[in-house]
Amino acid sequence: MIASFFNKSKPINFVIVFFITLLSFSIANFNLVNDAITFLLIVKQTVLLFIVLTSILLLNFIVSKNSLTKKNNYEMLLFSLFLLMITQTTADSYILISNFLVLLGLRRLLSLRSQKDIKKKLFDAAFWIALASLFYFWAILFFLLILISLVLYVDNNIRHWIIPFLGISTVFIICVSTSIIMNNTYFNTLNISTQISYDFSSYNSIKYLISITLLLSFGTWASIFYLNNIKKKKKASRASFKIIIIAAIVAFFIVILAPNKKGSEFLFLFAPLAIIITNYIEIIQEKWFKDVFLGALFVAPFILLLL
Image (cartoon, rainbow, N blue to C red; front, side, top):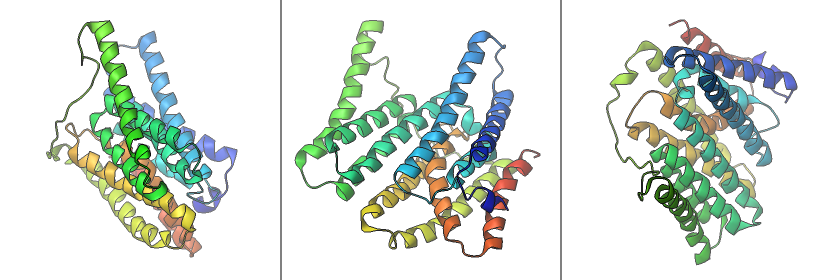
């Protein structure tokens, strides 16, 4: 039933995704924001909600533009359900902005398949990812995607390998210049914190354990079929699908390394995971199993709200 409903891209699907996202955002900020209600606070929360919704629309654009899934809205639905499953992902403004910038970088990397404006796309991707790292330092790990994209998409032109580092250098120079002008110091605007933590005790609650178990189990199961299915894709499209699975691995390591494990760090994992699971749902032949699989992902977040 649910699988059939979202099998085609329809306006009502966007309304449902918007409602689920708004519910997740409202719950997270109701529990975590203790500031007095002011006009400035309302503006801030409105902007953050806009960033979340724009991230979902950007994901949909990336998927449709690069034919990463068939013409459906499963990836949007899954992303919003993941937000509701771990509502804390919408509570950290810095990670929300960082993830949005990473998606912008990912969009430019996947567009390399056209082999047009390669230098510009490499520079843009590095620029967005470097900018994302200013809001959450460990987002810099996504720079690995650029290097892998160079191997998968581009020839051995040495200039292509230099350009991403120019993109990072540009962000660094802008930040240092801004810091000198505004604060009379060199590195005040740079948010560089290489701290890591392997303390997972903050996840030691029923809600977290169930949410993480569902994400990892469904994600791992879908990834097995996703990797096998890459071989069946057109040769020109395989690189894009490989980048998505690598993005999921990078995001997983960010979760592992995150210095403050509040749940918000899982946001980086949601976009690639939504694409991977969508690809698995599309290859399920049995209609009843497809409905059960997607139904379980749909119902679980709402049940977890009661815990």
